[in-house]
Image (cartoon, helix red, strand yellow):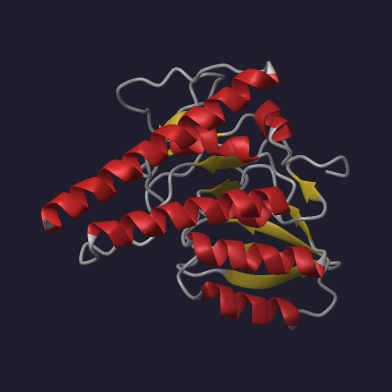
Length: 246
């Protein structure tokens, strides 16, 4: 009986993934601006240039960085988000988004004197923490920026989405992929499935709150967690990451 319950839970999760994917694809089709990415059996390294229809790359945060600007080497980013002052109301928020970072970073933001905007650079990390920080950024009315030659991947675009305005130069790299929502192998299958469903629902609700088109989840859901889908400038505009002020 237990095996039957697990099987039913996994089947339900699979059907949900298929239905959500179909919904997102149909939404893109109805927009009249749809092109199916040409995904091969394996993705090239992140160091290879990205062209339309060839945007999925292997992704290992501790190994691969995009070849964007030889003048801007991020070096080794912090293992946890770090908030540092730049100049003129601009601060930098960079590093991996670790579990528990939301409470710490929110407190740091509240204590940052004269903060008006954030420059972001991160390989991603904890989605729930990114959503919590992003909602706080929106409450504070902070702008978000990227710099040419820097990157914002995985959960980082949720921080980027919170900015009012958002400034994304053409030489910056923004990437999305599938996320994990509860990775413990000790959890029963039905609990893990419930976490995935709830997590995807939270992300869709968050994107709508931030004014981002949830259709950005289409390429994200099609890209495994060990790869990254690089959004082209026209896609950043289509999914409303680019604001008129940016």
